[in-house]
Image (tube, rainbow, N blue to C red; front, side, top):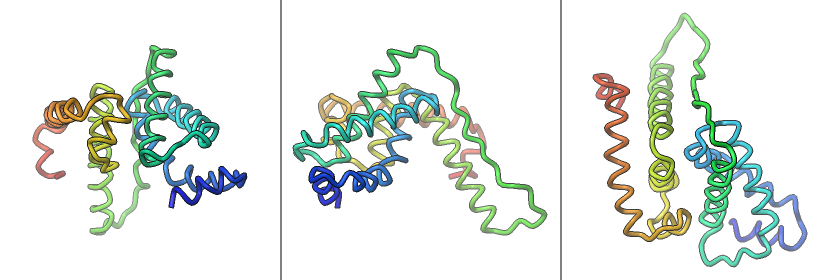
Length: 186
């Protein structure tokens, strides 16, 4: 489906780029946030990345999928912003539903899911940028090792090593955060 919209944009239908923006904005924000560790800066990175992708779409050769090509732009733009801005604020993802007197099973399930997402994101944010990025690409985007290697700019064996190390680091950080609560959340 991406190829169809890429073709339309290349043919001059610039509004078709909206499809690609809508499809990739959330994941690219998550990737950028994992690297720059600041939500406002991540939003800037994503905006710059889409601008760069739009400008460079004519040169996109399709050797890899659009997602791989675009995520590589996001990673490079994130790294560029890191070198420009050395100070970062902690990202706080704490949106709680309004207080209600009636609590049903669906609300409890939603709270558990929100807690899980919160702890996963907080843990990823505490990790080294590259480790966090590789975990996000592998588990959240379900990308192949070869695509991750291309995006990050390393070989597949190094991706495997980083995944192994990052999974262990993730578990250690998460266990430290949750201590005894980990069993009730998973």
